Image (cartoon, rainbow, N blue to C red; front, side, top):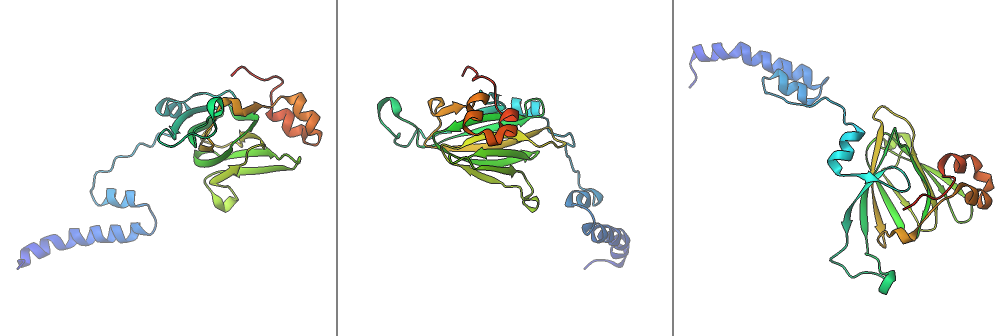
Length: 216
């Protein structure tokens, strides 16, 4: 049984904390509620930078532009194909575009690729299908704006990507490739060659392709 002294002693402080929690719960995040209630709260408010991502994820430059690191090879599963044409059944990478290197230049892959958006600014994908149809898709974190969290690009489609601008200065995705990625399966787009095939898409091709194929 609690004495009258102790009940009276605790009544006003407890009521004050409850009022704070009740009022704050509707207007502020849980982090603020915990802080006002006396709990120690630690949070790093420093924005994540592209340089920090490159370092912490161990990324390196990619021949098509941007940065990447292979994170998975299906080494415990049978390989597809035969002899020199063997491929892992699946591979996966991180892929990063930055404000300093905002373009993944046009290229074509043999395998299907599924893209998964992680964080950062939206990324626009420009796809030229084998029949010449052009498709644009924006990957990003806000489906309310029509941004996609996942995108599948089939083998044989020309693909380029670029940051659409934003405050964070980077866009990070993952890619899963099946059958697994091999550089022999990737064709890098050259401006003159693409314009010969798809002159109707000149603006995109000139903005998102290279004049010559870089060394791999």
